[in-house]
Length: 306
Length: 188
Image 1 (cartoon, rainbow over the protein chains, first blue to last red):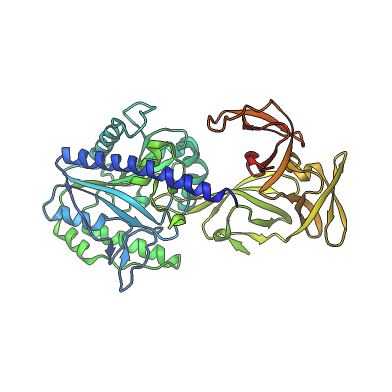
Image 2: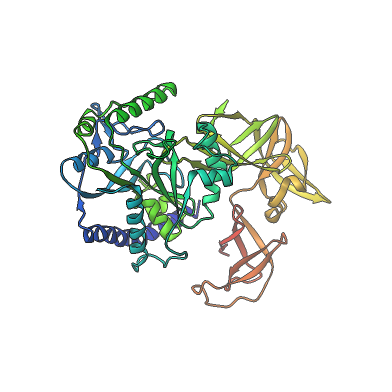
């Protein structure tokens, strides 16, 4: 046990260095969006409907509220209220997610823009990465822009020998993801994985010319899932249908079903402008930028030090 | 039956009649998708390593029925290592293969935990920190306690590790048996 105190001291002193880098990164993120005339917004962390996803579980905040798993629904409502470019850096919470890439509480950067789709968001994401690599806080980039773009269809065909977009099999998809796709992504420094199978559309739009695929992309850096983006779904009936599918799946897994966010649905019914958006895990982004392999080492107080 | 929530380092589980130990594990979950636990398991008898991915909530096996008894290492002859129970003086033998890397840090009269699977000795666990003599190293460089420079030193067990320059061949060292690294000099 003689080592533990000095090891903890070392962690705390690394933490001071990391916090200074975090500060510089946050500052650059804000300045990036400021240069693009985005409005920084704040939405509540305590919400009535924490998520619409079969596999994301929220932490209860009592009295019928939950801790937000992402600010998605409220931010989209703001787009409906006349704001055109918004971003937010906030804390998000997810139950039962602990590991070297997961922390129940983490920092999320989320931004939305009207008049664009996932490809526009992809370009903006790339521009943000360029801006971050240009700061002194981050070691210089060891690979070349622009980022590679890989479709889920091609990834699975190359690394798992089948195409989930034409023949959907959910259990096989996720098992192959963990055993084959994610390990393959670990060898790629930075890549956009795009055009997911329609059953994984979440709240993204399906492609008009190929409804088996949705307009969704994820940014991966050395296998770390950094961000998830959509051409946002606008159709009201499709929302209702997808909410129902999520409830059905959660009931089948005997999981809590969160209430539908009626005010969000009302905003969709009223009509949102065409838009795209992305959620970026800031802790993981910092991990990838600095080559740090445990999320605890980029947070000021991970659960283990609270 | 244990499920994935029980997985942690050094968990010992029985799979198909063999005891396996979790040497490493990773929680893996796509942002929008099913959760898994990736594990690296080591067979405690054969030493074989197996990577296995479990879906969250999946059953992984029974807890392996492993007993630990504190015993002193007496001597080795050829490939056999003899240990003695300090309470009832019972002696057991295990092979150098089963002792594994622990031979790097094992000296006579050291107390270790001997692991028994269904009453059969299958291996040992060393204390995290052990004190060992140096057999050979270059003469000490006095006063150099800050440069961080190191030199190799051979322990009485034959194991070679890096030590700071101020260490001399008549020093005793504290070694971390999990990493095989130098921790500090034992004060005389």
